[in-house]
Structures are given as structure tokens and as C-alpha cells.
Amino acid sequence: MLALLALAGCGTAGPGADADGVRAEALCPSKAPRYGEIPRARPTATADASRPPGTPTPVPSGTGTSRDGVRITRQYAGAIDEEGVCRPSGLTAEFEVTNPAAHDMTYTVLFDAKGYTGASRVVGPVRHGSTVHGRVAMSRSYGDVAGGTSVSLLSVRSIPSAEAPAPGGPCPASGVRVYADAGDAAMGLRMVGLHLENCGKEPYAVDGRPELEIIDAGHERVEGVRIVPSAEVAPLDGTPDVARPLTLRPGERALSGIVWRNTVEAFGGAVDAPYLRVRAKAGAAPVTLTPELDLGTTGRLGVQAWRKQE
Image (spheres, helix red, strand yellow):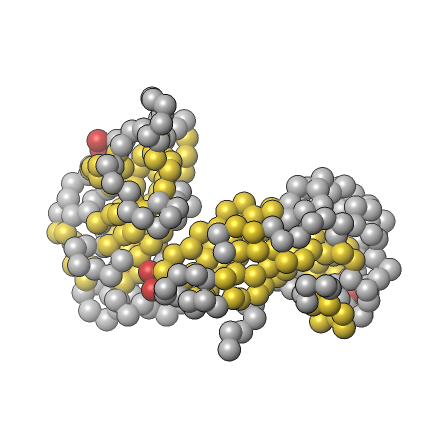
């Protein structure tokens, strides 16, 4: 049986369900301002942390927004913050994720609502044919008037759970971690760091650059893009891009990076691919990252050689 995801939630289950059978949650007390009203006073932990039962306040907007296996099923005014305080000025959405793939998938979902802070959730592993339910809460500043009444799905990314990056937690069975940082973008030049950590018990040797596969939104390999040394696109960090053998002792790290330009010089043929499958070396277990590659019509992706990270 699939467990309910440990996402931001509000209150305890309410007694009623709407026509489509989705059960509501008792969010903030029924005396809370209606959606769109300006809160008159900041709630206090003493008054609100107990979350007394009340009537949920449905947001007056359509539900059923869906994208790539994710569907928003219900929205409410009010949210419980990280301190357990009920914030009438918040906005909460219930959602579900259904996996149609033949193997376990892990989803990264970006939510947005005009006038509110955005939110992201990682959901998974979700087994083939299974549906997992979750809840996400967003907030706005006191005194601000919300600019919209609907939570939207900015993006949905899904990768095989066996290839999900693991920047923390238990060491993967491979004995190494491969993950990406947040990257940087300026004047059409994009850069994302690739990190390699030997979290195992044996030395780990690499020779040269990581192996890369560009994957599109349909999870198909992108052909026609050349993988070149990073210096052919732009220098990274002023470090010479020299490929050489490197051995990492347990606990040691290495750094690489990818670089590209999003120049578009012709109509059609621009490449936008959200995923990048990375192998630390030939034959290594793959890790799928989501650097959101907008390669334009350049047809090139630069990759830096591994170098030891001090």
C-alpha cells in the first residue's frame, strides 16, 4: 500500500467529501478570512498551533488542472506553516501523481499561484500504474492581496527512480554520488556544475570526462548534438580543461561541469531538453539530472574533465 507523501499539509481530515469523492481537509478555523480578504492580524502560535476543527474554505476556482501525470484535485484558502501555525493568508492544493511508465519513477513538480510564493515537491518512487496523493502549501506576505485564485503546474519532470541523484542520505550501491548544482546563467551562457563523491569504501578511478546523453521531454535520446570539451564553448572557472586519470579515495570529491549557449540563429531546429543522463565513466551506473538544456540551434554541449575538488 502506498503511503501518503510527507508533504506540507494542514489539519486533520474533514468529515465531508465533494461530488468526485475527494475528501477535504480542515485547514484554518472557520472564522478565518475568506479567500482574497486581507488578514487583519498575524496569527499567533498560541492561538493557532492547536488547529481547532473548522470548516475548510474552498477556493472559488476550477480544479482538475493536470500535466504529465500530475493533477491538482482541490484547492483551499489557508495553510499550516513550518512552525505549525495556521495562516489564513496561505493557499493549499491537494494533488495526485500517476505513473504510467513501466518502471518506478520519481517526479519533481513545480507549483505556482499568482501573488504567492512558488513551491516544489519531489514525489517518489511511484510504482508503475500507481497513484500517490500529496498536498502543497504556499504563502504570501501579510497585507498583500493575492493576485490569483488558482494553483498552476509550472513544470513536471520525471526520471527513473533507479537513476535519481542522491546528494545526501545513504550511499548508493555504486559507491559514488553524482549530482548537479543549481548552475548559473548570464548573457545567453549557461553553466551547471557536476559533482562526484566517493561515498564508498574503495578507491574510485575516473579517466577524463563524464559520459553524457541528452534526453528530451518525451524521455527519448536527442540526436544531432555534439558533446565537446567545455573550452570549445566557453572556459569554466579559468581552469585548464585537461583530461587526465584521477583516483578518488573514500570521502574525496571531484568536479566537472557542462556549458552551453542558447543562441538561436535560424527558424526551427532549436533543442530544448530537460534531462541529462550522466555516467561518471564508461560503464558506470547512470544518473539522470534535470539541467533544463536550452541549446538553441548551436548543436553543442560542452563538458569539462573531472578534477579533484579540494
